[in-house]
Length: 211
Image 1: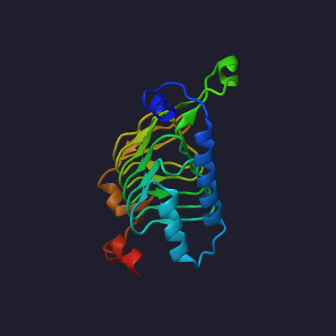
Image 2: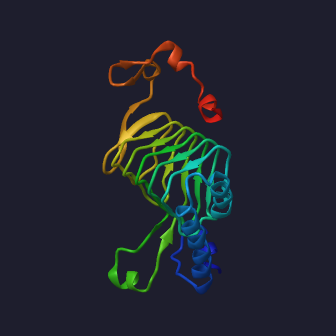
């Protein structure tokens, strides 16, 4: 049984020579991306295609970004990743369309056993992470192995997400928990009691990307 097959079954797995070779390739691409000039847009787009399993159109990834394997990450369209996104992507990470990441967000698919003797063997476990469409992840958030975050959810800054979060809610905290649903009021008020201007609210996101 390969290490990927062990991950898929939820078994403990271990680093191998093949894994280190794969990781070395990913880190070379990551290094090249992180040291590219912001003006080298075409080069950065091509590197992103090589770094990740798949990445959609109109995605922006601010430097630096950290990946372990890269090929296990699938990203949709119109996503934005602020600086210091950290993918602990030994296993699958799937990110939908129109997802926003604040600075210093970590997505971890992998953990280690609690028992120190077992941990000393190098044993690890990995479970997939799924992030739906339209999700906003606040800065300094950590998303733990096996978590699914539903469409349009907002995760407040500094959260540690240890369990699934449903769609269309605001959630935050350590551990992260649901605070309230997203409602019609949120269409009118964008921040506390600040009201959305009618004409301003008509601007479509695609227009901003196409400028």
